[in-house]
Amino acid sequence: MAPGGGGVFKEGVDLSYPNKSVNYDISIIKTDKSSSSTKSNKISHDKHGMSSSLNGVHELLQCPSCKNSMYPPIHQCPNGHTLCVNCKNRAHNTCPTCHFDLGDIRCLALEKVAESLELPCRFQSLGCHDIFPYYSKLKHEQSCRFRPYNCPYAGSECTLTGDIPALVTHLKDDHKVDMHDGCTFNHRYVKSNPHEVENATWMLTVFNCYGRQFCLHFEAFQIGMAPVYMAFLRFMGEDSEARKYSYTLEVGGYGRKLTWQGVPRSIRDSHKKVRDSQDGLVIPRGLALFFSGGDGSELKLRVTGRIWRELSM
Image (cartoon, rainbow, N blue to C red; front, top):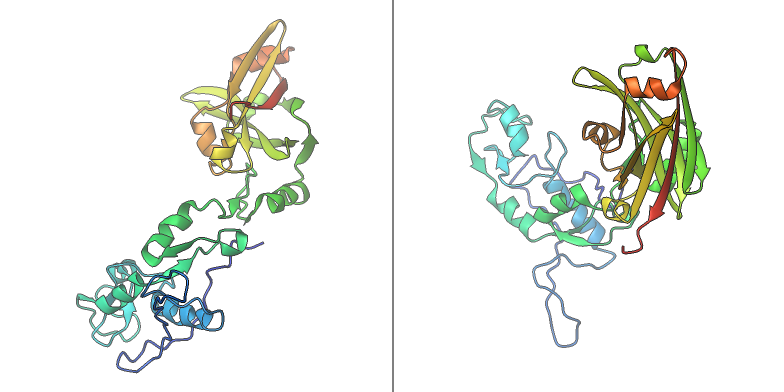
């Protein structure tokens, strides 16, 4: 369940000798009357030659030091070893490959080669089939809707990424999160010694509603010096899809209640980002203890809610 593999390329081109003749096998497409409309100066999409051609060219554009793709300005030492701008700034004017002084030489030829390339999104295997100019590819991948999602489980440093079905299975099997079918819920939260809880977070339930998944979170933190609790909903999908839904949360007791209505936030936003924006049902501790009854030694809150799809969307 590793994040997309459509743009992974293997090393194979020797950059040690800049005068060495290397055949990069870049095919130039020419248009004629008998062929469909094609652009000139693009890499041939022949299925037998495209993979090896792109592998070789992509290797040239990979920084030998950090292994990331290089973007202008691309630097080189007097011996022809290339280096990205970030690694050059860290290299203290010494080539990491041959240890000669770097100077300030631009590799204009390689920058020009990059301009001619069109490459698939690195998340091609996850469903993105668009092709981008080399210099636009990175910007697209940073916001590609097919890029893997981070695990939305709150209160841990889980680094797993994947698509939504994989994350749902992961939450259920590895984090033991409760799964619930339906668009209404009634969740009871009990915590002893609530005064000892200053900063805590819990994912209570994942709801399967309208064929989509929603995560209910509950947080304990402080706003300034005031301790509060907060409940909110996150949508397992893109923000554009999340805006098609609304939800309410309600908590109360002894004839009083607090109600929140809002739009679920996408899991592209971390639970901390949602919490810090206070985009949810915020319950001051004093009021939470009042709702709980008793002598305040135990927090007992019943959070109810409903999710619905906006018809206008």
